[in-house]
Image (cartoon, rainbow over all chains, first blue to last red; front, side):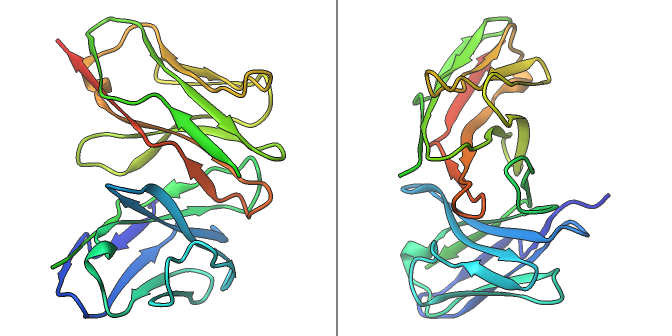
Length: 115
Length: 113
């Protein structure tokens, strides 16, 4: 079946603009995670959704970052007033459920470049 | 807090050489352990996983054993190929935090023909 998809694959924006990144998880997966992969920081957790609710937003780096998930499926990560340090690859992953043994499946990522 | 430490790269080997990439962890509770691989220009793919102590994960000739006594999950392969060139990430999931993944820094593997 279809894997996790993300759009756009690349996004170049100017400092101070807002951007929206989209994630379409594997159908039927209830858990959804956002991570960020950057040169200086490696891979870091941003936010977790179970269904439509986001019980864990602890990884969001600032209040410029927000995310929502609608219908228990598609998720959007929004970054307001982008800064150059926001440049990174943003990865979305989904898993069937939230459990110790479950596997997270990753999308191809969105490469964000803030000029 | 929970953390994963893996050997720095790049690791450069000749084809058919034996591979070991070291990974050690600190964790509270009982996480599962994972190796993910990122081939050039591609996304992260699960390579193998182990969900409890002494479990061995294996896939595509790679193996790793969950060693609780040494808090390790070293990746091994008996005979590497050029096509194994990639970046390898060791990770654990946090049972006390919705199983979010905590990552090692990644090890770039270069296999020369």
